[in-house]
Length: 193
Ligand SMILES: [Zn+2]
Image (spheres, protein in one colour):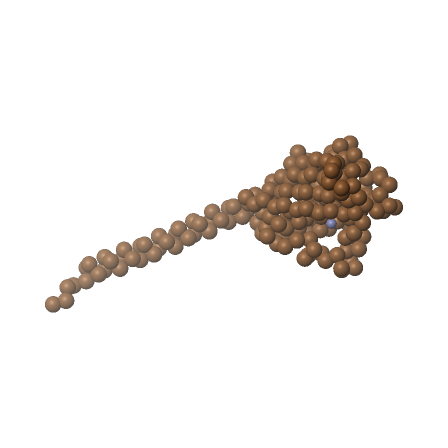
């Protein structure tokens, strides 16, 4: 099993659409910055990449690259998910905490869970979305997201590993047999006079 952790923050900006977890929410402000500013999907991307020690969102999708300006952040999640699968892992579950002053996440949490579950091709029951207000933290002008993911070995990879282990054991048996044959031959060899 592998664990991955991601964190991100974006500043609220007036007149920009607000996207959190791939869901567009009604609010006076959206999130400025890299791509569509989806703070939750960025933290999720980092958590996925982190779990397989494959760098971070900035190294794969540099904010300085104009092609990511205003981009749909689900692209980053799907790319990270592909890397996870190529490395032989699959997502077990995800948990997240958002820290933001507004809007209220409670009423839309299930929509966000559904959206993330669809992206990762897992059940919404395996996606936790929690939210807190930034009391005493002075971060009211920003949205912050923390995400952890748990990965387990892909079934095919598990089978491949078992097969490889058996092959190795087989090879080892060959070596033991060869050695035995050698020993027997030595024993049977006529003693030199
Ligand atoms: Zn971000």
